[in-house]
Image: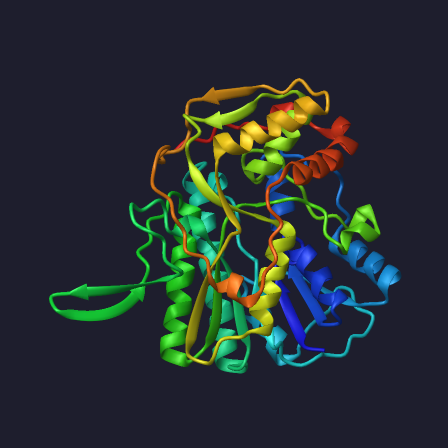
Length: 395
């Protein structure tokens, strides 16, 4: 019955994670300020289907399972608001029991602006991304240092921190021999957007906290996630997580599935040779759970490369086109000028033993997975607005 705090509990991963842990009888509190929903409204983006707010979802979950997910609405850029989760001075927005559960044994940190394209629209969105993401992480780090040093911080990083180096991407660390001496350093980072740069800074902040204050931190270098259904969401479709299909917040596989169903050509950037890691949403939940039950020691920054397979954009597009045509959809692939500054042909070999050693059982990007995701999207086909799929953000 550990007490778990999830920052960013309304998001694509935050809400499924809350249900996943609640279903395992953890005491779960989620906090959010509806940042993602508000940014979507601000720039004119639609979700694939309507998603109830956090209070409505928590009530539905409680009615179906009898398990409580406490909800708190507010902005954790405010340091005192962040600290309230460790002092007990919480004003719950919705809860069955208003009793404080005690300091969280773990904090799962999803509470950042999560889009590389959004961070690159202009200087205003870049500034917002930098301020929001770093202030939130710094507030969390200080709250744990001052009020709950035994709390395990699980922070969602990104494989985008590494870029595409011409050597193997080790699992967070690199041993260096220089002029006859050896040492171990954080693996060199070379981000491709302002968003990814803030994630590098997150890692540096938490590495500082680990070195100076003996915090215990797991940093998950996550690749793009795809999928929507989890075991918990199957109870009721209104428990499904947020599903973006636009260029700004939609991940490539989810976006391509929607494009295939709606008759919009699959927009492959450049030559389509960009290779990245990918992970099913269910494997993301299991990865975080495995990190939770196998906590690091105090004074340890443990880094996992969180992916299950690597694919090129062309491989993704070809598979989705094949399944879409098999299901009767007129699906084409269109190569467009790459709006991003990135290598389209490159070496990419990622070491990812940590989660495998902990026992993760991957869901791979199979025909069956594509078919099932396509079935979900087809239910909401009439909601798709083609004009929001591609916004043409360039950098």
